[in-house]
Structures are given as structure tokens and as C-alpha cells.
Image (cartoon, rainbow, N blue to C red; front, top):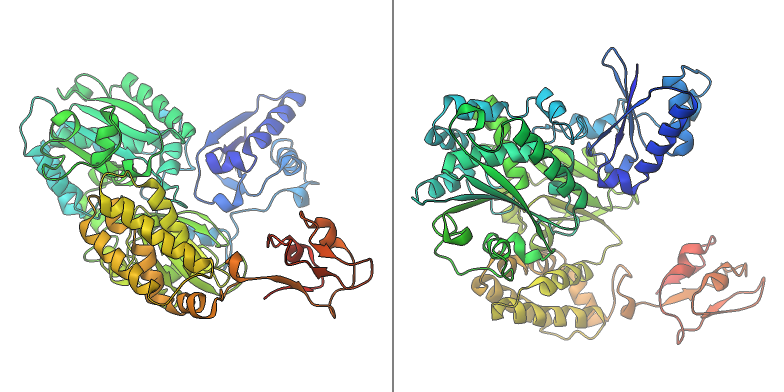
Amino acid sequence: MRELIIGLGSCGIAAGGLTVKETLQTLGKEASLDLSIGETGCMGMCYAEPMVEVRADDGSRTIYGWVDAAQAKAIFERHILGSKETDAQCAPLLTSTGAGSEQGFLDRQVRLVLARCGAIDPESIDAAIGMAAYEGLKRALGAMSPPEVIAEVIASGVKGRGGAGFSTGLKWKFAAGYEADQKYIICNADEGDPGAFMDRSILEGDPHSVIEGLIIGGYAIGATKGYIYARAEYPIAIRRLKIAIRQAEVRGFLGKDILGSGFDFTLTVKEGAGAFVCGEETALIESIEGKRGMPRIRPPFPAERGLFDKPSNINNVETLANIGWILRNGASAFAAYGTDESHGTKVFALAGKVKKGGLVEIPIGMTIRDVVYEIGGGTVSGKPLKAVQMGGPSGGCIPAELMDTVIDYKSLAETGAIMGSGGMVVMDADNCMVDIARYFLQFTQSESCGKCTFCKIGTMRMLELLERITEGKGIEGDVEQLEYLSHQIKTNALCGLGQTAPNPVLTTIRYFRDEYDAHIREKKCLTGQCKALIRFAIVPDKCVGCTVCAKKCPVNAILGGSKAPHMIDQNVCTKCGICKSVCKFDAVVVE
């Protein structure tokens, strides 16, 4: 009997996956069949959702993308009923090969963290165990002492995947070195970067990988209690986490005397309210304790005095998801991937104006160009690539001429960007880099907790300057003032939010200074994106008087009769751009 599997991560559900599932269930009932319809998380190809996989008795897999209700019926008739007349009606196959094919999206990847995502039912511990979940834990508890576990993690070279890039093993060693009656290990799942969805997808698709990493980490540092701090905006991830925790408890992977080792460990999910600053580890600790999420002054560091003033260790989702693989396969196997200084793989959320947006896991050392073009398929508009924003709102904008930059911690830092948690936002020729800098700074400024003046007030002053420039009110010296404020904030802010907030501004000034100068000196936006610096106009010779733009204008700013050239009343026009988007004759232009 063939089994149908539907991708029901957040991306699959948003694209209509539940409707596809209901359609298949209805068809099965109508045919009086005991139809097996399974669920899985995101396999990374978010751009092709909803996706349906057909698993045959012989183990073969056929995967369809962009499935709607009609195509679901065709898939059912072909694979379940055996009809051959519906082949042309089925959705596009994702298993085709060749340059530019959908298979190419996967061929360049190395999936260690994402190995089970999209391949198992995330709500089935048996499915996870069938793909080697908890094998690393068995090795750690059955054959290794805590110092040996830490030595293995250090030897692997795995670094924190949350942005800082500090050695995970050394971080564990510091926490293990402090004596206390209670220690804690915490998973930071407070993913808040615009355009980032790595942690969410991992938790939705393979929660057991993170749970296993936490248990191993707890054993290594001597912690018997763990927390997963996940933002409440991730309801599917949280629900599947709680299911996975209950299943792990029943199987003896959590609780008392785990696997007969004498080691006890319990795990609690703490839901955060969505404050970006709580991604900073000490602010996260404050939030778990029931306080307002604000960073602490360090030292002391969490390894000495963390949660409830006890030695604590905090790692992010992706970091912990690597641990089981490392313990199962060995440090040398992990270190075989990557570069001499940066080992392993890195998961990126490929978003923005890219043709194939989704989740990708690559060996560290691949170039940005390879990710954007070989995996992502280039820009969705077909227009030239302009820049890639890496590291989230705290990262930097890397220009097209640096697309051959190797993706590792050192090389990215040299461009002014950071690896960050793994956001990779693609921008094309239509993006205004001054406005991009304003957008990201607006985000970090609004998320500042207000504890330190340099961050709260400094970013506010920077945002005021950027808003003034994009409104055509910039003056000579504004760019220099932005640079001055940036360096002051980076040097004096209390936590990582403030210390990295100026990065988008500094990199856009560094690589796109001509756009700042045009805004200030010519009062012109070179890309036509800043509303205050543009006007929409109709070219009389091209306008045929079809009246479509006039009918679509929400403020009735377009004047003119049928079959006669139209014109735009600039005093009424709100510069929404609808007229340009609906004109089939290219008569509407931006000036």
C-alpha cells in the first residue's frame, strides 16, 4: 500500500497544505480505502509548498510540489487508484535532475542538522529513532565520562550557531568547571531576525535532535535541569516540542536514571513573548526567571552565575541539533566538513528576492554566489543581484562584487557582516540600500530594551538621520554623523544587540556610498523606492486611454477620459505604485 506524506511545517500550512490533506482524506473515504496519510516538517523547499510525497512499498519516493486540490486528486488517482490517464494533471515533480532542476536545490547541500527534517513524522519518536535519534546519547551515557564528552565536542570544532561563533565545547567546559548543587542548560530558540526561520523549521521538523543535544550537554556540564526558551509565535514548534518531550520521557531518555546511567535530567519549555533582546543570553535568563528581559552586566558570566544564580550554559537550536550527530559519528567526521578554522555545516534561511527561497544546509566554505545561484536559482525577478544581507538586522549587506566570499566566520567578518544565526536575504537592483539600512535599524531600535543609553538613544538618533535622508531632507555631514554614532554605539553598548545594530548602516555606507550621496546632494533615490524622492507620471505618447489605472487608483488621482491620454494629479497621488503595476503599455514611469 502506498503512503502519502504531506509537508506540514509552517510554510506548508501557510501555502495550503491542510487543504491538500483534507482533499486526500476525502478521496480516500469516497473510495472506501484505508488511506495512510502522514505528516512531516519542512524539507527546506519552502518555495515549492505544498508538497506531497508518495512512498511505495519498494521504498521508492516520488515528490510533488506546488500541489493544489485538483492536483492532489490527480496524484491520488495515479498512485492510489493506478490510473494512467491523469499523469499530465499531476503537480510538478521535484525529483527531476539537471542544471537548474529542483533536485539541484538539494544536490549541493550536506544535511547533518536537517537530515530528518522532511523525512520523518516529527510527532513520532519511533520515526526519529529509525533514523538514529538518541544514538549519540547512548554512546555518551554508556561509554563516556562528562570530560570525555566535552573533549569530543571541542575536537569537532563546532562553534555556536547563534551568531557569536564561540567554541561550544569550551563553553561547556567553563560551565562544567563550576561546582554547584544545581546547574542548568538552556536552548535559545528565541529566533527573532527578520527573514530567519532556521530554528523554527528544525523544531517543527525534528524536535528530538534538539532534545538529544540538551541531554548530552546536561550530562557533560553536570546539569540536571534544562529549558527550551521558544517564542510564543512558534505554536507548531512548541506543540511538537512538548509532544517529543513526553515521548522521550516514556522511552526513558528523560527523567530519572536515563538509560540506566544514573544520570537524571528534566526538560521544560518556556514560552517567550517575542522580545528580540531576549535572544541575548542574559536577557533570556532574566525572562525565564519572570523578570523583564534586559541584559545583565558581565562578568559574572552565565557559566558562573546564570539562571537563578546557578552555573548555566546557553546554546541555540542549531548548535544543539549538531551534538547528537557528533557523538554518534565522531568529532573527526564532523571536522571533515568545512574549512580549517570553521568546521561542519551551517543552516541558512534563504529569503528575499531569490527564486528558490527556503532552508539550506551547506558545508562551511561554500561561496555566497554558490548558495544564491546554484542552490537558490538567482533572483526571482531576473534582475541583477545587488547585495545579500547576512546575519539578520545585526549583520551587514555584502555587495554583488563580493559574492565569491567564502562563507566562514572570519571571511564574513572581514566584509563587515557576520555569520549570525543564518539569515540570508537576497536583494536585487530595485532595492534602495539606504532604505534597507533604515528598515533594519528601525527594527533594532524598536527592540532595544532601553537599559543602556548608547543603544536606546544612539540608535534613535541614527534612525532619525536615516529617515531624514530617505525623505530628501538630508544634509552634508549626515553620513559622517552616522559613522560617528555607529562606532560609539558598537564600542559602548551593553549587549550584542546594540554592539551590532549599526552593522547594516556601516556596510551600506561602505559599499553603496553613492546612493547616500544621491539622496543627500541630488535629492534622488537611484532605485525609485523612497516615496518622498519620486513621482509617478504618465507618458502621453504611450497612454492609450484604457482607463485601467484610473479605475484601480485608490485615491482617484488619475485624470482623463476613455481613449485619451491620462495624467496624474501630484497633489492627490499617494505614490502607492498601483498604476504602474497595472499598466500594460509601460506608460506609467517613475521620475
